Image (cartoon, rainbow, N blue to C red):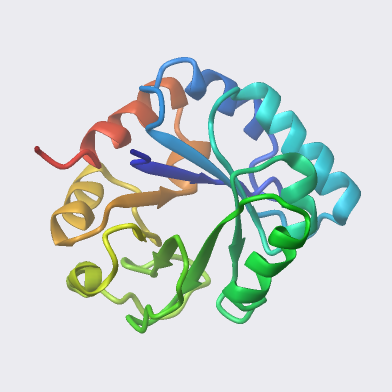
Length: 202
């Protein structure tokens, strides 16, 4: 099961492909996914970047923000829709017209999670630059209202192992990290530690 989603942002962290390759070599299979969130890229560069990430991390699921067309062209696992993006049903319909199953994720900034998505990112859970007031980990208790097949991901300010553990204990199935993965000294050490912290005791 995916425990950690690594969200890209090459405007701040340009060496992401090299870090992804190092991470993919050491994490347990199936434990991470990569969300490509590159708002500044047009379709062509975004597709090229997605393919570069896929080559750097074979077998790691990719989610691409907001672009169903690029998601399908890249062979990515899913599209991730912003809070005011395309409706989930329409994204599924586009994929169905091309005969390709597609997972759909959504971002939410309040615990109204009735979206029909396969994955819901809820946050910011903790204080993080440029985002609204933190919701706090208690909001992750909405996990109990979601279908078992929906993955609840905590996002926002999860930059310590203690916060990762707290988010999972509060109800999240997985966590999403940005700065913790791309600013650490050795991502091949840091990201596996986050995977372990986000793995709830059985």
